[in-house]
Length: 421
Ligand SMILES: *Cc1c(COP(=O)(O)O)cnc(C)c1O
Image (cartoon, rainbow, N blue to C red; front, side, top):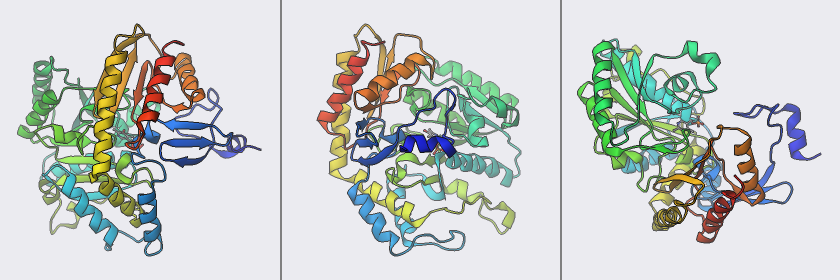
C-alpha cells in the first residue's frame, strides 16, 4: 500500500475537510527548492512550505550544525536552566531585530508567539494596575489558531464554533494610502469608548488574506497613535520576518517600532518548529518585580529547544550572508520584471509585490477553496510547481535559493495557468 493510502487510516490533517479533499500527496524527499513524491514526481516548492524553508530544504549548513548539536545537548528544561544555543541565538537575533527590542521569550509555533504577545500586552497593563481589556486588530488579519490568536484574526471564516469564547477585539481597516483620516478618527472613537490594551497587526503584508499589502506610512501613523495612548503594539512578523520584505523585518520599513514582535516560520529555516516573542525593555520591566505574581507565567515544555535554537542561529548566519542577500535582490528584480510582463494580461486584475512576496489577482470571482481554485492547484502540481492559490490570488514566496531557471519556470506555469481559468 502507498503512503497516501496508509495515511487515510489514522491521520487527521490540518485545515482539511476530509470528505471533500480525501487525497494527500506523500513526499519522500526534499532538497533545495524541490519536493519529491512517492510516485516519482518533482515539484518546485514555490511557497517554501508555508514560508519556512527560505534557505532551501535540508540546507546542508543548517542540518550539519543541528546534527553536531544533537550529539552534545538535545533538550533541557528552560525554567532555571540555559544553554549555549539559546544564548548565542539571543545575541544574533537581538543584533538584527529593530533596535528597541531587547528580550526574547521562546515558544513553539506562530500562534503561541502571538498568544504570548497578547498576554504580554494584557498583563503589562494589569501589572501597572490598569484594567485594559480590549484589543485592536486589522480586518482580514490572520494570527493563528489558538484562542487569543483566533480572537484577533479577522479572517475567522472557519472559526464559527469558537466565536463566543473570543477576547474582545475592535477592527480597523488596513491603511490604503487614502483612508488615514478615517482610520485615525476611528481610533479616536475607540479610545474614547474602550480601555484599549494593545494593537496586534501583520506589518505590510497579510499572508492569509492572500498577500494583501498595505501602506507603510499609514501604518506608521497608527503606531504613532498607539504610542501616544499607551496601546501596546504587537507586530506579528511570523510570515514577514527574516528577509521576506527585502529587509530583515517588515518593521524595518516603518519608523515607529512595535513594543512586541512575534516570530516563527522562517526562524529555523524550516528545519524545526520554534517561535519567539521579542519585546522592548519597557515591556519586560513591567513584569520585573519582587512580587512573584507579576512574572509572565507561561511556558512550553520544549521552550528554546537546543536543536531548534541551533537551526535558528544557522539560519540567521545564512540570512546575513552575501550569498543570500544577493539571492533576495535577484528575486525582487525578477518578480518586478515578471510583474511588468503579466500585469496587462486580460485575465489579470492586479499585481502587487513586497520584497520577495509576489501576488497576482485574477479578474475572476473565486471561492477561497472552491472548485476553480482546486483546478488551478491541480494544474500547478501537474506542471511540477507547488503553489497554493487562495481564492483568485496566486502568490509566490519561494526559497531564497531558488535558481533563476526554476523561478522562470514558476512564472511560465503561472502564465500558462491563465489560459485554463
Ligand atoms: C502562519 C502564521 C501564524 C500562525 O503560525 P503557526 O505556526 O501556523 O501557528 C500567525 N501569524 C501569521 C502572520 C502567520 O503567517
